[in-house]
Image (tube, rainbow, N blue to C red; front, top):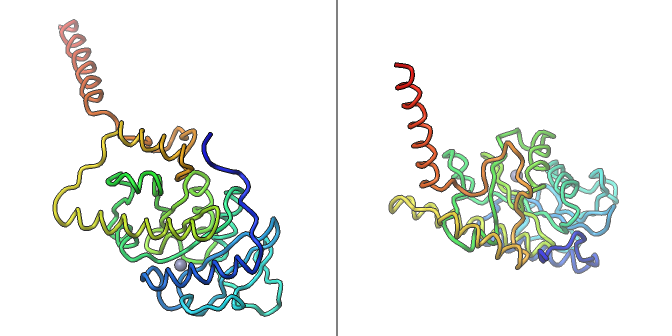
Length: 263
Ligand SMILES: [Zn+2]
């Protein structure tokens, strides 16, 4: 039992509109979006999505400002302003039949990590391991292009939170408030990592503790993890240093044996 469900709970449109407006207000108040940045969507049904309009400050939306689009991104009401970034949302729903909402934002500290070439996937604090899981970063692609959506679609199959290099974050969840919680946790984790780095060299949680937290996340319905890990993927936990030492010693002694036999 993973605590997950493959079908997001149904939500009626008026409630969804209220939740999106509330989520956008939270994001704006916390500095996770600024100006006309960011966009939020909710899956109303298999064929209809509710999305924020483009070109306006999302911190001051009214429920009636939101736009309903189809699976191709076309608005139900002709002339409604739909963001070009809606491609990312459509890609997310294609990748994840289990999610009900997508939140795209520009969290400043988390983005700064991608600018500095640093991974946010450091397993420093247990809450982050449980709530966010691994946080991969999609390589830079010009915003609003199909390349951005492709990279996100691939990574979201196994993750709930993805960073886009030099751009922002994509967080998904069963509903918009859950996705927004992940966004807040992402920026909070980035701030903690930044502070820890400025004070010294933070040490990641031990591998066995990370494995324990992953099991906890499964029971609690926490963040998604790669399952099974593809052969080319980075290991979910760092290798045990003692095991690496033992393997190196073994290889070394075989090489020395071979050299001695060759004399
Ligand atoms: Zn953006």
